[in-house]
Image (cartoon, rainbow, N blue to C red; front, side, top):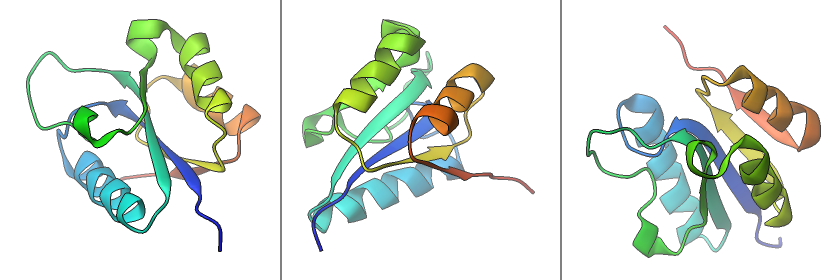
Length: 111
């Protein structure tokens, strides 16, 4: 089986709860098994928590807040991904674009 290119999409670049902890573990496990991973996030919170994916790990990251929604989506598509694993986005326009334009799995977290 060829390695996959999996992009994670979430609202925060920092681990602020269970969702981001899950993404951090999944990204590490996929990378360890030879798959390529990337992160698209809506924003980097002002508070300093551990990153979902460390920048030193060589994992591409795009921030919609920094570069803009359109540029972040273009960069993600140009990365050549196989699938987006979307978690907990708060920007409905960003989520809609991911679900409409890219191959995407939406994981709905809840009670």
